[in-house]
Image (cartoon, rainbow, N blue to C red; front, side, top):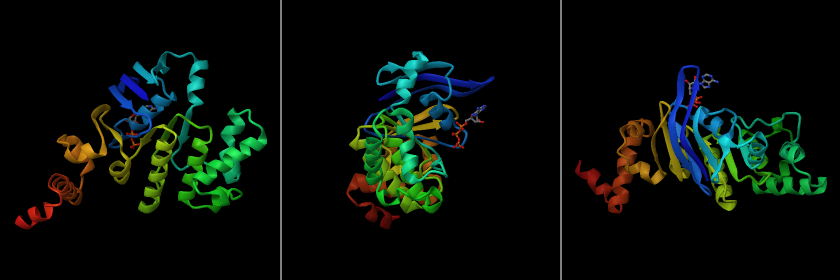
Length: 267
Ligand SMILES: Nc1ncnc2c1ncn2[C@@H]1O[C@H](COP(=O)(O)OP(=O)(O)OP(=O)(O)O)[C@@H](O)[C@H]1O
């Protein structure tokens, strides 16, 4: 579990994060959502320690990350897997070598054990057959899966994904979401995803933090969203008339066991 306690972050006199408190739960897919410029990326960078917060605390499983010496922070970072936007694979390395990279950096296992672990991870993302291919030879969805295999190769306790669906078609996006969710539950990972994708929000959002102008505006699950009366959240999620209608149908459906059809006929 990761806890944010009243964190603030400023650049010069511009305050970007204005006292955010939130909890990212283990074994769950935690989403950070919000409009462009609301502070999602800055927040994620602060959580992983790529940016330093001005005030507040960040706790990793009750340990105060903000108060740690650099040596201790490094130990926490080793438990973090990251899936970057655009996959960020090394073009000159094969799929297998890309997934091997974190092991070469941080593991003292034998080459044989490392290769075995890489193959286990590639098998988990159904890419064993692509081990010898180069990134240029595989599709965008496959690249994301290589990125996921690389992110889990060190058995992370925490997994951060920045826009995991960017550039993917809706069906491939759903497969990636499903895979991330399965891995999160399977290994009890605290997964944090920064996303704009409404399918992800509705399908995978076990726990959602909605950011509005540097503040946490709302926090809850994908199920809570359907019934939320928060106007800003509703305007953001259900931006189109089509989605607003879908929400109303879903509400009636959930409340009245499918009787929304009768309701609609009356209107
Ligand atoms: N290194 C930086 N120096 C100064 N300002 C920054 C820096 N990084 C981000 N900002 C500012 O912080 C604000 C929030 O940016 P952030 O990238 O977190 O938004 P976001 O919600 O992730 O947006 P998007 O969905 O477009 O990625 C923006 O006004 C941005 O200009």
